[in-house]
Length: 187
Ligand code: HEM
Ligand code: HEM
Figure 1 (cartoon, rainbow, N blue to C red):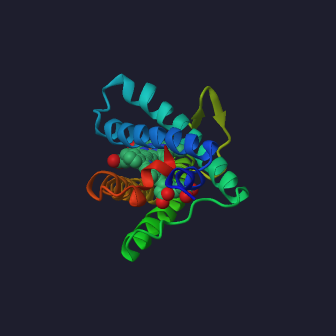
Figure 2 (cartoon, rainbow, N blue to C red; figure 1 turned 60 degrees about the vertical axis):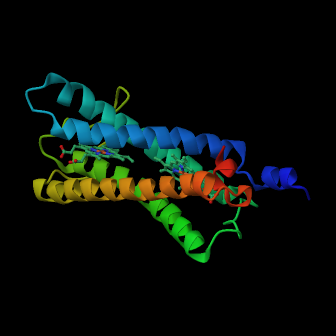
Figure 3 (cartoon, rainbow, N blue to C red; figure 1 turned 45 degrees about the vertical axis):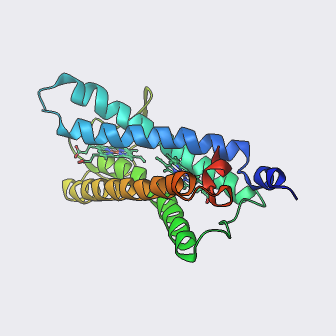
């Protein structure tokens, strides 16, 4: 098999590649918006009229995209395996980061939903014009717990994404070895 054949069979299927980049854009936007909106003064009208409802809508959308991605992944045989050309510690770190990211991509929006649902002063969970049912009882003590978890886990996710990004860029630009370039599998 020549290197070109190897590259083609090694790539993620189109559906998973597209979902990866759509979700990456969504998550980057959500992290920025979450950080930005919580820093705004309460007097700024856009804080609760624009940022909060749209953060919730896109947050629920990201959750649905991640569930679709996980379902597709489980139903797709023969996905690319960690590259044998990478060092053991690199394979270990990348697998750990990918699994932890998947876990947080599910848990972070669930904490966001739980926070919005339990807060007595919340306007509910807005999803692009539809108010989603609030499944949890109103309780401000629980709200504080969910708010803390949403914040800490969202910034932990950011840390993992930076590690993930550093790994992908290192293999492409620093290693300068096509056999270690994982990025081509996702492009
Ligand atoms: C993967 C999806 C999500 C990410 C990455 C994310 C990220 C963040 C971040 C970074 C913050 C700022 C935390 C801080 O500095 O205090 C935040 C705040 C917030 N998020 Fe999310 N979020 C997501 C999904 C959701 C969802 C689905 C909801 C609700 C349905 C939600 C509701 C909120 C609310 C209400 C705040 C403001 C909390 C406060 O006022 O202290 N988020 N989010
Ligand atoms: C918000 C941002 C991102 C998140 C949450 C994320 C998450 C993930 C996850 C969970 C996987 C595992 C895919 C699977 O096996 O199903 C993955 C794979 C991958 N991601 Fe990301 N990613 C993000 C951004 C990026 C960026 C910016 C790059 C590159 C510049 C990148 C490059 C890759 C590559 C190359 C793979 C395949 C790794 C391999 O084949 O071993 N990702 N990403």
